[in-house]
Image (cartoon, rainbow over all chains, first blue to last red; front, side, top):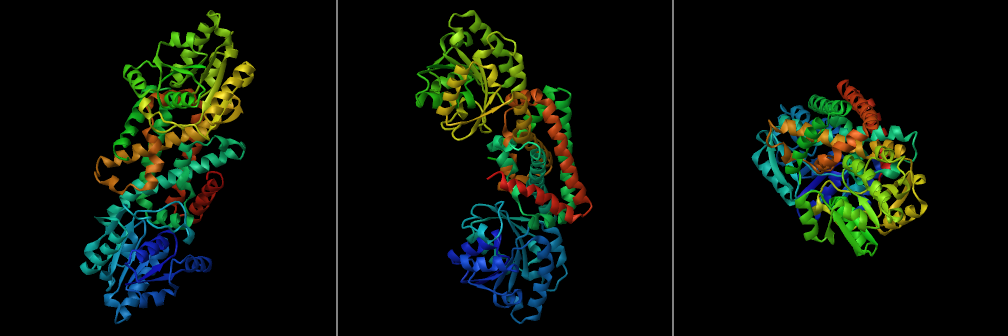
Length: 285
Length: 285
């Protein structure tokens, strides 16, 4: 099967590696708007050829959109338009890998070729980006969300299930809007708390040059996500705005509860809050 | 050298393991108020004997206080009193390993035996606690703060430097109050942000049972510190109250800046905030 991958970054590049070496893809056509990334993707061997979006849509059996969600939302209707105009289009499949699902799903809800699109979110990644960040086995054992599969052709869904099975991912089926609520809680807020932590400490560091001598392992793991890329995260935070604002409000309230307890020397209350938070042990290994 | 360790938990127990097997301690005397932990420490082999605090003070050449900072602050003057009453006391050394240094150092500032005390903070740990959490090599390569060494006998300081050298720690010398400001920024706030994150997500989980199916690696690392123990953290947050409140205020302001930018669809501002936060890459590997 010829697989076209749009965006030769961490996600697209890592998919390319495993789909090729595990035999799902006979050929990888890469689409990459950034010239440096395009050369790198070819040099590293992520793609067999770098081609235009149009050529990839015409030649590939399945297209994977692995670019930030803002760009993906613009690109998807164009790809379905091209499928509609082509005699081969009705057999082709396009998927996206974006971290928010509501807007992109709504953007093609009434498109005549909607059934050729399967909306997915493979929940894997690192804080690094670009073709250099691509790695084998990135997806192994992780969850992949399939959103609104009832709008897709069942045979197309089966092919995409096969693709993610080759990547060793565990499928979870979900409504796109529920997906966006859940990821606001278990992914997006973590990034915002890390960004805010980095900003807080970097502010202080302007005066105190040696503050980072003391950075412990705990700080490093808590602040790790603050290395994440703005190109990816700006559109996520915009597109999932309502859910994220709601989670942030809850989070700021919890911080204020802690602050009040510490301010009032209320050790019993601090102990209760920590005890409640400790329940996370039972859930996260 | 006979080493007495008060508190056979993660820190005390891990010290016991490496000080013994690397030849610094000929014998480890453990002091442990909790009966279950005391039996475990002996069964695991962390201590050669479990003895009373008084016996440990009388028999050990060097005493390590590795209990939560509230208890340590009460215990330290009693130990120096006992040194004062003993003919051997002027040759003995006591150290603490607490995560806040201001109050404990002030508590014995005028004690006639102050010079026998060396105030340290080995910056290592995990989110687990108790004798079962003790592990070899916990301290290797990490920083150890020495606070206010000018108040200690220089020969006592040398012995303690030797002890931490055996643990492969890198010494940093610092005023106790500066220590408390710096650790508020690079350690204490990370714990509070993790506790608040856990509380936020656990709140949501009451309604949505399956939210944790989606928990990604990023969430796990950001929330990891929320597993930390209340017995340790309640006294830290109390003792370092002023510094922590100041950092929390900055942090809450940063969260509100983010919230405002997201609320106002101000993508340029979100991009700037993430870009600033990304500077952490240059500092944390």
